[in-house]
Image (cartoon, rainbow, N blue to C red; front, side):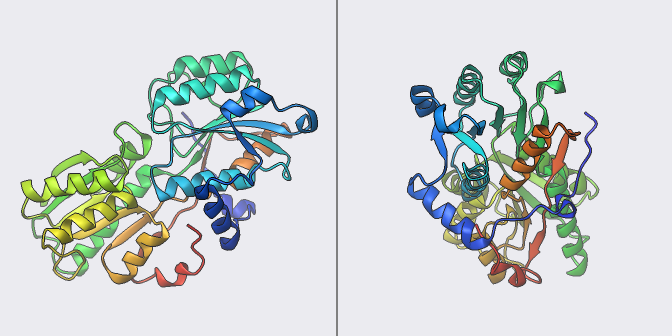
Length: 351
């Protein structure tokens, strides 16, 4: 696929204010319904005609609500695609199951929505349902994660993070840290808490970090195991790593929720975390609670995966509605947070 990346910041797309998004997060997690979105079942039962006839109808299937990041991602999309902004949003929570997403996509097709948007649980297994959407003439927009299909015309465009680059950023930070601390020639024992296997975020972050790690014969990746992007599973896998590998120097945790579980497991085992003689933690996502741990030194580096993609999505749909040229991929802007720079971003963090 010939991907052309756009830095959306230079395109003048405005971010949600922190107070507004906090309100949306609060309402979303409490289950209240101030958004102009309905469930798949409600849309099938009551339809979306009448006063909604002039709205752009979007069917959105989200992976689930397995993490703080995912909740923020959902809230951002719901906040952008409101009736006030000209949209009727049909929302589906797939609860981490591909079969649920496929069912939701087929429901969107049968309802003749204007656009289908989804964050795929895994990369493979989408060809048939996407063929059905293409035959129905419904554009499909991928968010956050990618799909692995033989024909990339089965989806219209993708919006999300460059997860391979995220992995490289974590590797480059460790590379520089070891040089600065005089440890570049020491043997470094590493374990990796992977996300959901075969998801594009797991594959990308694994590949990107491995690209840097493979440059050094003294970096030893002792084990890699999925923590499924959850706190509980992250803790469980970290406990197993600590029992099997007593001399861990670095933990690469592919999202903050797993990191929270891993830190708990390490500290309960009597080990320390942090640069000062502890296990070095490299994390991803950069949710606010994790950035507080960066401030205190518990997490050495947190590579941002930006969930605030709702305005990006609205802009892409606007391009399609106007019949303008659309790129095949749009990469969101992301930062790297360490103890040295994190404090200046904390007040503006909305998730």
